[in-house]
Length: 478
Image 1 (cartoon, rainbow, N blue to C red):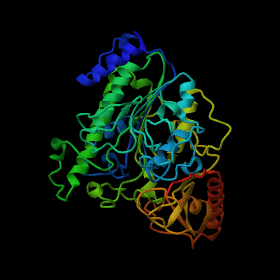
Image 2: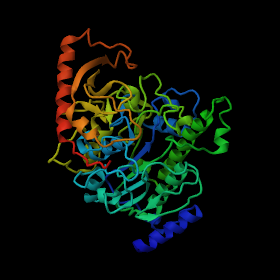
Image 3: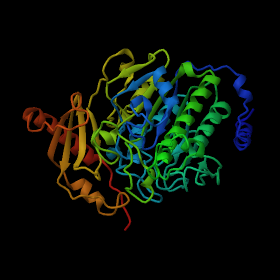
Image 4: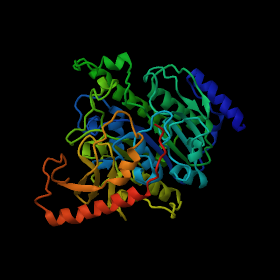
């Protein structure tokens, strides 16, 4: 059966809501592991039952954690969506690659062609690659003016530029491999999961290993949820509250369908599954659409848009049979920038040697050893809600730096004039926390630990200056 005929069968199957695949009778021949990344959008550290939420029902993610390992110190690469995704794909801190903020439609900011992604590296090594869901790494999706998912290594893509529009219900703005899809009936997470499952069953070559990114829009605004799930939360009486809880549950159901598909295809035993979120929870009423954003960072300080823990520490669950043990809880810090070096090690691929990488392989955690980092974990976001604009974790210590630039809480994203500010201003004042003793960052120890503060703040300033110098300058129209 040719690729064209398989693709035709696939689109018919999508329309019918089922998948038929004559190729599934062929045995899997790959010995290298498959990799499935499931990414939630704006899901807070405290939004999942196995992370302590007593209201929201997430039975499938809880089951995944019971089957594998739950990371207590899992970090996004940034406290906002586009930069976080750039870090995941490149292994580089997002400001280094020029993705300084979230990317609205038609914006010049994008993940440039000269960046090397984990998808491109694994594709060159013989992996089949697929991205479904939210892309958000270019302002011009499906335009020759900017790189598209296929230019960054994805054989197959089904994506939106930013949110599912007009809401998660019946979205109209998906593209599939360069073709507009039009109106789709159903909820975004289920549509994305179904597309991912049909790719697994119909499109991919079962003789090759695969890398698949499944990027849900949930629970990012504008939120909409099935009535039957909303009805499961009669105790949620505040305006929009039940919609949010149901939205997380709907996303959990979609993740569960992916796990069921791996079982059906007998892929589970040779697949590393990573579930995580792109950043912390949204703030209620921060903008017109955020009246349903009832997410929580649990015991952590801060939310999305912060480099405090609540903005960057997120749920992280890994299931990798033969490597993870059921019910493991691991406190070793792991970040989105670690995906590229980890997946390269799994695939037997050398990470790029011609550029600075900020992540490290987290393979050691599977044998109970710490991650060997050449550089500490680092975050930078120039438009934070709180005063700190940069943070660095060294062991149990987190140092955060304020800058001497002006506040930039203007609506939207990177504006004209912002590049000059990003390049000109530095870090001048610092906070210091011991995260092992104080994960909620309530006790600033800067005055108590002057020698340690000096050492760590010097490290933070050095990293900040290095990244600040490398980041490209965008020519932003008025």
